[in-house]
Image (cartoon, rainbow, N blue to C red; front, side, top):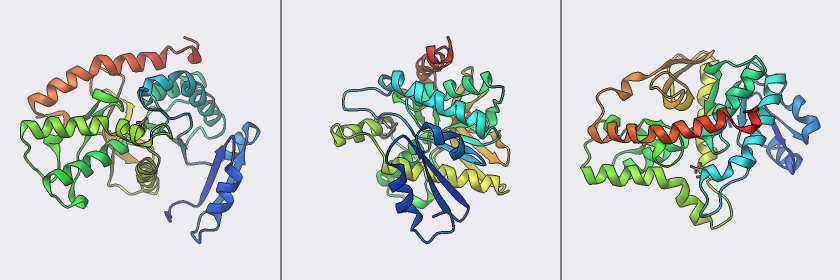
Amino acid sequence: MSPLVSTLHLYDIANVRGVAEDLSHCNTPSQVLGFHGSEELANSLKGADVVVIPAGIPRKPGMTRDDLFSTNANIVKSLVEAVADNARDAFIHIISNPLNSTVPIAAEVLKQKGVYDPKKLFGITTLDVVRANTFVALKKNLRLIDVDVPVVGGHDGITILPLLSKTRPSVSFTDEEVEELTARIQNAGTMVVEAKAGAGSATLSMAYAGARFVESSLRALDGDGDVYECAYIQSELTELPFFASRVKLGRKGVEAVISADLQGVTEYEVKALEALKPELKASIDKGVVSPQNGG
Ligand code: LMR
């Protein structure tokens, strides 16, 4: 649908030709091509400006995102190796869970290949922002289009930290509202997994959120100087090597990290930030030293 997409390459190990044929009938300006099986992976990536990786298996009820590690870590590793070999300058959007670990895995792979540019590697946390905006607008009876809640940290459980005190437009919450909204945003993915009862996790809201981040990336690549999104990136904002925060996007990827969001936060948010750090650090370490990365 985006006029900024000139060519859309779809890669999968199954069923991709039908999806590509289907999508290619839309009378939009983009050319859609399908690539099937590992022997077509390299060609699917050549010339790409943005590569989106949502591959891997989803959760079933009762599973944590980390339970996906053993399967999805290998899938992300081999896809990122192919990106390093065939689209070294592309923005890489990682969606595959457990995101807190798969982004560090991707960074290690890119380092080993000698092509790591931390400004171009993004863990997509846009769905947390989308959910926070929706739930806050509903709770406070605000116009959805006006609401923007920065969400920092990571993408799992308590590592998802919505900074409700930084909601725009400025709005006040009772302590009970903060606790309820924070828990709802942190558990939203699990709610979908449970409601789908074994048929997977969020796909439609994730596609919506993923499309928003791709559109923002394409606008930035196109020279728009006013593009801001939250993303999980290599970061110096805290002592953790990877951390999600609001960033300014430019032609070369992350142009600036918006540190102001972490200043002047509430006592509740300060405590929640400290509480998430050991958990996020453990997930990052797991990605960095995973057997897939030779650790
Ligand atoms: C989500 O937040 O919906 C995704 O991370 C998928 C999941 O397993 O919850």
